Image 1 (cartoon, rainbow, N blue to C red):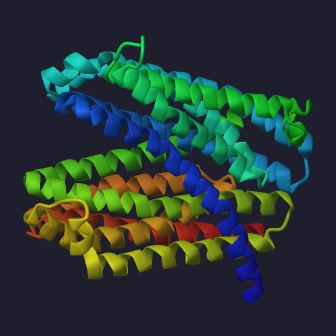
Image 2: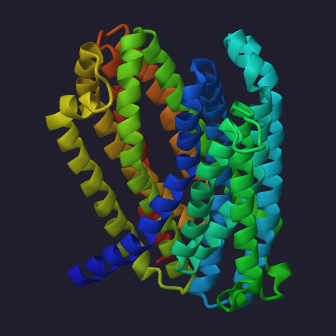
Image 3: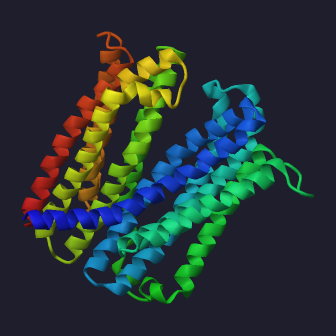
Length: 441
């Protein structure tokens, strides 16, 4: 039994590491833009930050909606149904194009709502062209996400990572040339950063498409046949709840940040320090969740339901050990870590107290995410998404507000509300998983 868990841990880690790297490459482009725009002044930097905040919600929706593609391909791959693998990929590319275009339209339209949210007029005066370029960027991002999902599902995840890395690498010189100008090329400033991001992602997508069409190793991914076996409606019904769940999660975090902002700029800055570190740490359980979804789907496709629980509990152990260890480090050395990011003594002091509570919320959120991933591998998405949404909105946010304000816990109370709500969600998801696997067995 121990050897089975150890073998699964190795397989999950082999798949999770490139998924984590791939998820990180998506954030690197935004970070690169911010760093290279910063010398232009605080207004262009604020414009990039505002654009990135809205784009992040839509990127989360795209990722959640399209994550079902990797599950379906993993299921067909586990069942050794090569033509079905190719059919799911082709349908996924269509859905990716539609999802990206829809997200682009929503983002472009949302720019006209910004004045009603009290955003600074000097920022809005500069942001328009960059905003729309990043909106168009969502289209190649969505299609490239499908390609990366396909390579992950057939146990070749580093190929997908290479295309994401290509976009990151290309973005740096393109940013430099287009933001600041070089030779006869004039400086485009903030607009240049938007053009660079779009061009870099488009080139990466073209490279992925060429690899798919021309490489001998991708023959199984471009085979013809079995279109009737893959229903568009089924993929949409499975993917839509996950897209909504990721949007709800991202939006809940934004609301939590705004609630903490009511305590003043010091609290907001300290929370940003905690979020910056926590987001980096959370990439690991998010990658584990993606890996466990694929491994469970492969096991189910091979009709090896006895392996589903082994895979899931091994993944839960991996995510819990990582985040519990991180919580201990943050609790012991929170002030030292905060000092690496901020030099303000008040920010450092509050961030150090926030770290432990925030880290605990990450532990239970890691459990919740891993279980959602396992259930996703079993094509069970609607009820887990409802459980997660209920945990974030009717429970975490009101409870966090009550703890922070009436009960006097301060900014730490916001994240204590999340800890309590996500712990309840994890318990409900464990019950759901054990019930489904017991019935399937």
